[in-house]
Length: 376
Image (tube, one colour):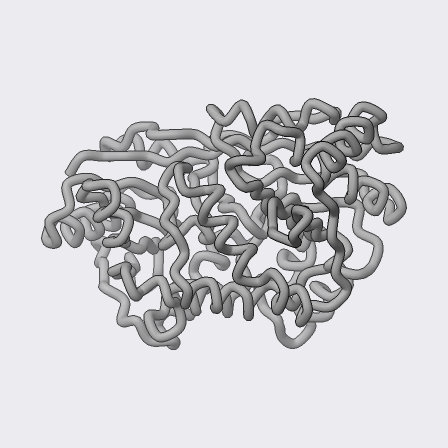
């Protein structure tokens, strides 16, 4: 039978089926790491995700013989389009079987939806904002993913390119080997930078206190730092409140490093987290009945992999050695706690300044992902 594509009603029951398909498709794959199901469901529900204040979206599912064979979401970020002057739609949350008829039907649906709303180009995979997973994996299919990144089968890029999508940008990711001690050069630079600019490293043991003291400042710093990066859209106050409540109270705070100036103003932040990849795989993205316990163990028991989720430094302090302070602070903790490897988050292949911070470490580029663009 031919493929049928249906628009998904934005209700929890239907969105949950949509999310489940994106996990079930990878059953038996040793590298796929699911998102937390409740998190992805909330991201796609207008009643939960404050990004719908300025975004429009429609999710679609493809069926053959009554069984799901693909999914995709079309997104228009009106705030970003207003700031860039573009008429750009995004596709995201995309998964499909290795079947040309399925991809033809899915992408036809999102492209028609975008054209009907006046859009002239489509990019993706992207989410509503930079806080969502983005970028299609094009190299590194035999490497286990992370909680912050998309994993997809190796046939995905060829299907997208066949439909007229071309490379727009690439992101790269590194696997870093944790050294036996803090490099002497890093220690020396860090101490000079702190003395020269009157900076200090601040640590917290209370989630409530870090939220109270620096919660909003942290996300305003992210907005300021990432403002000119590819596809970035500033988070609204409602989104900031949403992410503060969701994330800041669950971090392992010894792995969070804040750098402040002499007046206590936030200059930079480094947020790292013990890898949850294996825990999320075992629980298939579910918190119950035992997913929460696996995640808790991964967070607080011995874990030899750390995820470098986010580093942000105020523009006026960039290229002044501030990035070294985060590792000057955190490396001894990693070594003491038996961490052997660190996974970097996405960084643009052209961002030499970011990649320069890994010069102290043995590393290998082990994953590459891509954003595609097509004129409609």
